[in-house]
Amino acid sequence: MIRINLIPHRETFRKQQIIEYLVAFTAAILLSVVIVFVINTSVEQGLVTFQEERVSLEAKNKELSKRIGELRNLDSLREEVESKLQIVDELQAGRFRSLETLNRIAKVMPQNVWLTSFSDNNSVLALDGFAESSQAIASFMRALERRNEFDDIKLSVDKSAVTEGVSVRFFSLSLRRLTLTQQAEKAKAEGVSNES
Image (cartoon, rainbow, N blue to C red):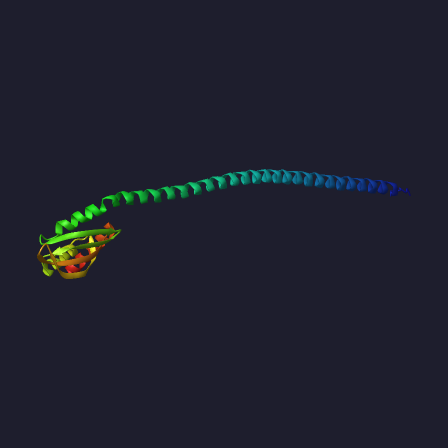
């Protein structure tokens, strides 16, 4: 019988198998290290890019904040100029307001009523004068009430007086001049009350 010794062949096969496993294990480790290195490098580049973008955005944000501050400053300056222009417009409109008001009063004043003084304190007017009778004063007050420009007409004095030897009535009136908006509201209110 012939005997064959297979032990050295098995040992050689095992050694070869161990070497193959070691090579495969080493290759797997090296491949894992390369993959981790590539991923790490990619992430670091992404972080660098994000940091650069963040720095750029912060710079733009500062610039925009500065511009917004300038715009707010311009807005406040514009509002200030507009308010000053409005004051100038009101002053320009008020230059002839007293003259126009006196002209409107003269248009409704009866022939038997005479004014001796007129004062204009912003929107409150004071009128002093003479009339032939109390009925003439009442007629004058009704004529003023029919005008949309005036409101709150009050008679504070109505007394007998003598001027140049003639017996007359001295009167003192106060009234309020209405703005255009108030005039429109008064006209609307009178229109509603007339319809009812």
